[in-house]
Length: 452
Image (cartoon, rainbow, N blue to C red):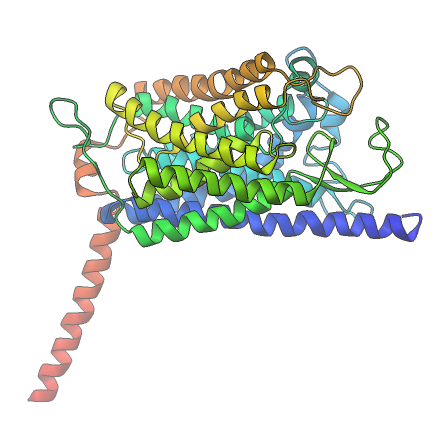
């Protein structure tokens, strides 16, 4: 590795990403817990299992082709970087045990956990009425194809959106949240509402969370994992002499995903302030509703995430509060106006807040460099708006809608009404109840024999 400091830097970077991946696992635990808390008792196991099975399916597909897309598609469709892609194929020497490579596996895993997050966002929106196979196909597509295309375009330091639009999205307001929210909206428009969600006059009925305590725990786990997510979006140590041949400095520093300098101190301030702004505003606008207060905290972080590497903490707080307000109001409006049944508010909290956050970043950081690379466009409102439309609409909503329409035409998308009324866990519940009844009958027989 050369000098001792080079060795320490390499080992620290490897361990750094390893730890962030462990923290990010809490995001998925949180999604599982809070979705089960929202779902009604008759759908608990189905809700849990579909969110569990996305783990192996997205992991395997991301290993086989998702990671290749990130490295090969920064300038797609103009060109494909075959050389960079070839270095990240399943048969590449770095994609396995390799004592000469300390980074690829843990960096790949960090992106993989982002993929799980994108799929889990979609999962929550369509609980209690989507077929398992349909959801798992969507999970693979959003987790290993569409979100990683937008990451290549707008999150790769050489992505065309960064070069030509000045796109800046340090902690994935658009790259993960807007696209997943848009994709979920596309599915919901085809999937339709849960039975009984809307009255005959179109008024939405409230279907409250089955277990608000599980929902609460789930949200706090997501907050904790999101903090790890923030750290994973940074490159932890770059030497003072050079940052990828482009800029020099006088001190060791961390960088954001674009290799531009930032600090973990900055993102700590801004993460907590945007969370606080979201919680406070959501509590007020929802009149103390617990579910929307916690959702607002998440919406606050997501809205500020695009620029949280550079915002002042007070900016992060105000932007977070504004995002929570918009998410709450837009969810109610879209539900009433368009009869969209988003069971967990995922489209609003992730999609609308993420879209708004990307656009706000264009105004707040107008004129700032999008990258340390010479010749790249600077951050601007129009570049960010174009990026938000690409993320939410082109790569999110449109594929989700069209693929769902295709599934619907094949009878693959939605469970039959009779199954929905009975519950997706009917067979599991019946098996459990029969097993309990069998044991209780055996116990009664033993007691009767003893009494004689």
